[in-house]
Length: 231
Image 1 (cartoon, rainbow, N blue to C red):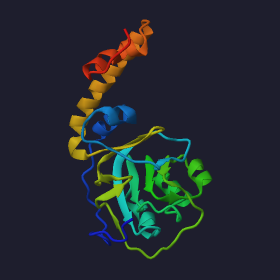
Image 2: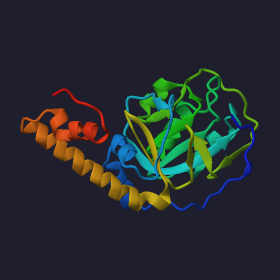
Image 3: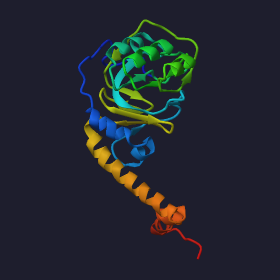
Image 4: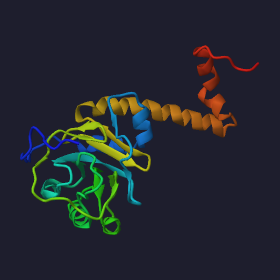
């Protein structure tokens, strides 16, 4: 839980966003396939999880660092979120002070934001739900802590143990949250496409009557690792 940031007080307005067509392609895969691709992706650790019924998120990161529990820069960041963005808030994991609620969710929805990821707490879940805004966080808490700063916007942050840069692709769904660094999107798309093709082949084999173990070649994998199977 960091109370300081090397760029605290900074607000960066000009960031490099992943191209929209690549973001759309990432959004075509579930987080599970992205996480399984073996490429340079970050998978947020629990307990950051979906707190809203809307869970489908894919967009470019607008990042915020706040002193744990302080709402000043989490609120100010709404000025810098545009169509297709995801607000990513590094709250240091503090769970006993909400960093945003329904007012922020409504403003973000008006601006075309695709979702909110908070390494910390949120509040006003009913209002967030009414705004139709997907939100992923550690939990809820009814009170805030302070409104004095410091904070920083569009700087490198860490959320759920994963480094996030402004403009990275954030993909979230009911299984969790995955971050694809902007500079690795092409590679990750290629690797994830291979995972999707493999899983499609498994599904096809099972529909033709094979068991899951047969379709996935699990017995062969067990044998390659030198483990015994009953004869």
